[in-house]
Length: 355
Length: 151
Image: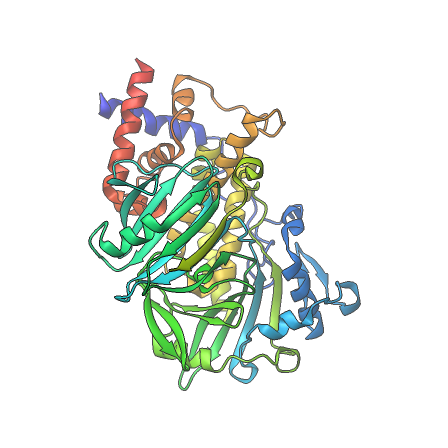
């Protein structure tokens, strides 16, 4: 019976897609020419629906890009005039961001967004060094995970799964999805994990984590709009493509996207965290109020540290002529996710208290 | 890799993968315009991430399925409210179509990736962000539900 049904499914899918063109309707004449023609692939221009989603941070960066003479392209429209972009009302924010070192960097590409405001994050470590990344998401649209072990902690049901070498504890109700990543393949529900899960008090989308003495909080709060700068860094004998992501006014956990294990380290005299994943190497740290990540598939962890040590703040002068493109979030024409249930659930919040 | 080389590689990828990705998106959204837009966005995102992506075809597939999920989530919400959003396209409404659309989204995705794209369980697991055993479970449950609905 199953075989018949599988065959019927295959036929159904083939029939359903039979009317679709077998090849792209129009191949681009100059596909991906340079790095600025983001929307030229099918010859069609899409309505700039997501432009409205570009946040205040984008306005700030537009001002910055204009200031350094960059060409700003949105949905194929070019705007290179400094006078036609919003004036920067908070230049001090720019001064808090780090930038590639101009003499040793090229192909600089700046992307702002997408807005991460539907989530709150925190990073804590146990007395034995075990690292936990905690994420509070708006629950709208999430589904429960079937066939995984569960336990009750602080009036919530948590599931546990393996996730790329980390333990992933998860709880979902009508308001919030609580995700707790414990780095490393530790036994499920071990004492450290239990301390975190028992310490999480969740009301609506507001989570408060209270931890016993000896634990360390490395920051908690709402994720904001990221600024991502991709560039090629020239090291001693080779160039390495890296991606620098910064989120002002948030905690370092917000940039730790992914679930591979984190390792605490010291970088340039400061606390940092690294990931040596199957594909990417990553370095994360907190630069004042700004969460920073450097990610690369090409650079080693040592090389990432070298790139990080050469980042600088003098963007206005040193970056002139080096920025090759500046796009608002380019993949932004999808319908927005489910609206938040603000009335009953609030918005994602997360705070940490160590007793 | 310079920009010309990157552009050529992306161009090849676009020629090779676009039609198949649109089909996957269409089966998961039932909207051709949304599918084309989703695939377009996936390529745009790939171009932005550039050489950070080690397996671009897999990245595209995952991007498209994730975007279809976002689309699906939005539709679920929209359909709860009296807002005109769903396109007036003409899907082949038959009992299998209705039964498939009644399945939870992850089960729908697992079936499309297994029986239309013919991906192995491990690849489907990567796309759906779960274990291969979960893919087996999703597929098994989906087929059981379909069998029940079609008898």
